[in-house]
Structure formats: structure tokens, C-alpha cells
Amino acid sequence: MTVRPFRIDVPQADLDDLNERLARTRWPRRLPGEGWSRGVPVDYLRDLAEYWRTGFDWRAQEARFNGFPQFMTEIDGLDVHFLHVRSADPDALPLLLTHGWPNSFVEFVELLGHLADFHVVVPTVPGFGFSAAPRETGFSVARVGRMWAELMRRLGYDRYGVEGGDLGAYIAPEVAKAAPGHVAGVYVIAGLGFPTEKDVPDMTPEERAHYEMMQQWSTGGLDHHAIQRAAPQTFAYGWEDSPAAALAWMMQKFEDFNTSGVPADEAIDRNLILANVSLYWFTQSFGTAAWQYYETSESAWPEGQDLVPTGLYSGPPGIRRLAERHNTIVHWPEDNPGGHHFIAMERPDAVAADLRKFFTLVR
Image (cartoon, rainbow, N blue to C red; front, side, top):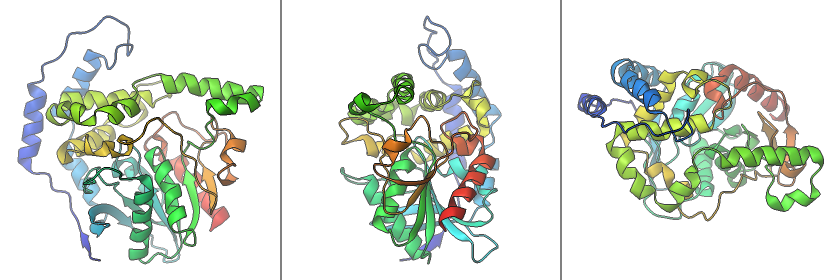
């Protein structure tokens, strides 16, 4: 199948429309409560939206993204967008990176500069950004895993590593299941060995403490699983029509995923966050990126796979003995730095160093 070059070129009319909509925002009244207790604070979002309108430079971000070799190819009936950044070392290990939700390839643009000793492939998940959206229900992470295995085959890579976090933590193991003879190892940012209620009776006191901490974390913030499971079409009217509503949705989740002690747009460069929000806005991805929640009845943690070795950037609060029920764990650090769920955006240097440690073990 044809692999064709791709370049981002958002029409100026779309930029003008975004700025006009931001300028016409009808701001809600502030509700009682301190800080984020009722959701994204009005003053906070107003300041960020004004920066998006008058300070953020999409064209500069667009030029930066176009500095990476980008391509399109059709797989399983869908156009797939991907970055393909080759190492100067012809014998470098190919590495496939899969982004999370609500993110895009933007999650890895800071990390790419630290991975010169890998051939890096960054595909955009269907329904996100410039990749075509699923056209029917029943689309699954297993299907994406098979698509990624086909992409790597098409690029001529016989043996490669796979990484994923958030949604990518579900997809990356599926690549190994689809092509176990070709995957050197699966690296997950976090998310394996998370306990459930049925595991409680057999827990040690330390494991019980991890479980209770997880319960507090998972019940805080806004339950995006439930919203996108029940009525993503309903909410998409606001996300796709009002940039202020879209920004509020994104910042709610980036803050829910933040344990750094500073606002999310300080833990991560606000220009990077706004580049990601802009990408969703220009490609109308807010609704189409919700496909992984459509048919789910409950939120489940990723289990991984046991066909190839597994490594993690961050083990706890996952419990290793539980992760080992489904994975062959060879790398489980407990002291890697970071305070945000999207750690590749916050600490790309640390993620790159740890990736290198894991793939040195398995390649």
C-alpha cells in the first residue's frame, strides 16, 4: 500500500474562525466554591483562552510539527497519519510510540529530540487528529494493535519496540499480541497491576494502602469514561462549536491527571497543551476520539500481555505481583521522576533515559 508524504496546513480561515469564536465567548457566572471544586475556575480559563487567542502562535507550532517527517497510509480501510523519524544509526532499534487520550502525536514532540538512537514511528490513533475516524461501532484497541503491526511491517521493520501510556497502555500490548515474533518488548508508562475490589482479601497492608490511594485518585475529578460511554454525541455539540467549552474540557482532564503540585499548564508547557487542543479543534476530534468508550460497561485497567517482555516507567501504585499475572515484567522502577500522567510532555529526558534502559535489556 502507498505511503505518501503529509504536511499540516491549517487554512487561515479556520484560524480566524477560532479567534473570532474565542473573542465572542459568553462566559458563565462563577459558582460558589474554592479553586477547582466546581470545575475549571472561570478566571483561570478566561486568562488561558485569552492567551490562546492573542499569545499562542499556531503557525509556529505547525512549522515545528512539519519539521518532522510525516506520512499518510491506508490501513484496514482508514487513513493513518504518522511521524517517522529515522536515526542516523542504520542499526538503531525501531520504536513505536502510541499516544493517550485526550492527546495526540503532540504528546511526543518533546521526547523525539531525546530518541536519536531509535528509529521512531508515532502513529495517530484513528479518530484523533489527522487519522480517519472509525466508521462503525465495535472498533477496538485490538484492531488498532493489528493496524500498528501492519504499519511497522509496511515500513520494513522486522523487529521493534512498542511504547504506550493511557490509551496507548491498552494498544501497545495488542501490538505484541498481533505480532509477537516481531516485538522486542512492550514499555508502558504506567497502568499495569492496578488492583480491583476482588483483589482486596489477599492484599498485604502495603498493597491495601496502594489500593486505597488509587480509590481516592480514581473517584476524584471528572469521570470522562462515564461521559463518553453514555453520550459523547451530546457533549460533542459543545466541544466542536465552542472553543471555550473545548478548552475547559481539556484543562479539566489535564488537571485531573496532574499530581505535580503546580497547575497543569505550568507542569507542562502551556504552548504544548494548546497545540494539542488546537489540533483537536481544527480536526474536529473531540467526539470521534471517544470511540474506545462507546461499548464499555465499566472502566477496566489495562492488563498487558505475556508474549514478550514488559517494562514500566512507573510501577506503583500498580502492584507488581498483580501485573505479573498477565505480564513478564523485567523492568519495574519505583523512583522515576514526574508529577503528571502525561510524563513524556513533562519530563521527556527522564522518559527517554528509562526507555533506553528497558530496550537495552530486551533488544
